[in-house]
Amino acid sequence: RLQADTAHKTWVAILWLGHNNWSKDEVKADIASSIAALAPNQAYVILSMLNWAPSGARGTQEYADTVRVNGELAAMYPDNFLDIRQYLVGLYNPNSWQDVQDHQNDLPPSSMRFDGIHLNDAGCLAVARKVGDPVSFAVPSGNFRNIFAGYIARRMGLPIHQPILATHGNDGA
Image 1 (cartoon, rainbow, N blue to C red):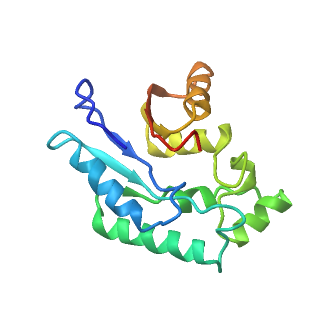
Image 2 (image 1 turned 180 degrees about the vertical axis):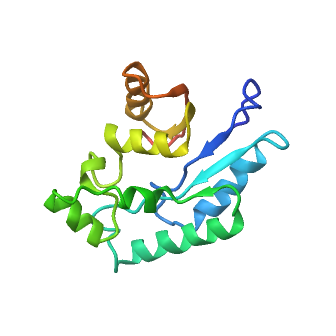
């Protein structure tokens, strides 16, 4: 859940929600709620949801739901939506058999993920470069490995202005 940050009202809010939602349709309400919590006229960008591998491969219900909801979000927020899923899918390594398989299944490539959904350093760097320079990341997470990875990436030179953590109460999942 996003709470209004009174100290950073002039920053662009990057909203990247829904990867862990079992019901992809909940994401639209979550994003609307997040936008409502922003300061009046605060700029924001909505990043598309990623589909899980392998359960979100082309032809699965998860894939259909993810692509459908991303399309609905793009229609609802045409000036604020960035299809980061499709961008990442296009960054596959044609010399990697697994990346080629992922590309054929319309999945973000394995070379950019450390598991079925979470991006590794290369994936995070690709997103940061696509979104802008420098960026601040708000990380909605029940655990702290994601924000720690952002901190390490910042120390390694990734153009992250400030990592911001928002936690939820789902027992660290």
